[in-house]
Length: 423
Image: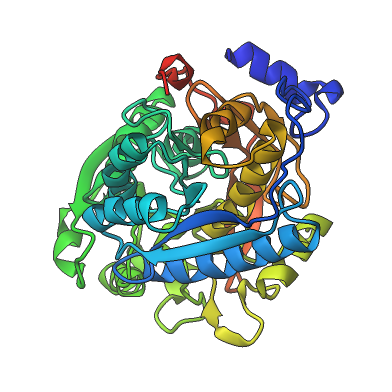
């Protein structure tokens, strides 16, 4: 799909619903079986992705309840088979094998951390098991994986940073130092934001890569050049609170402008002692944590379903802060799987290729209860979805949305054509 065609879809009211442009709709008869549709949930229960895995699990439970309450998929209930991959690539591949060979799953979904997605992809191809990842890494759209791995429910880093760079350059400054985790996800930020800020006439003065298992960060901060105008930070894992606290202690009142990806504060309460220095700084959010003034009815329903309050924390425990910027991806991915299976008349594992073809044929995805984060465009050739991005500012201890990008801002030329690959 060309950029022109994508823009045409966005501007055309005739694009209609999720499957409006899907030629497979209605081609197949309804499923005859009453057996459950089994979906393998590759969950980061333990390891550095545990906070995400816990909220991905809550979101998955809520989405499946909504789908089953509405009649399931093709009249069949959805059953989730969850396995802990330990946020480990080797275990990730083993989990997919269990889904296919032990549990008889129809498809898999849920992997977030990029090294796990990359390590699991060969197994998905060998097992011929559709694997719908919820990751953000550019590894899907780059073409390095295979036709059995798709990312239709969450956008990727390359599109995100491309959309952020103009705001950073025009609002905060053009001399940037980047701090990022030293694995594939962080390398995506390094490579694609560097190119994006240079396209805006800026430059990255220093790249500071930090091991994702690091527990203290102060020793890295002296590497930040004195003439840095913007400190771009993205950090992941259980030590993120330590990272932002130490950042504040190091700089005191003399910090450069701060632009972070909310990964650095996912599952972290902004009211935590030591985070006061973040007041006035900016963050990318995949989905605004705090309910905004223009909150949609879709977001209200989504929050209620997953048990999250207006501040982005658990309704039952205000100290239990969600991974709201990412976890919507499970909700939307499960609804994409439902739509794909219904378009393909999915009846069992023999129809897995038909399921992938049905999803590849999707194009414009309107904002809806199935897609509460916002409208999107799916590119079947690259197996990647594109959508709106949000920039928020910390104001009075809360994240307030100050900018929403267009979907056009996130498009880049295709780097792969998975449709040309055989099954």
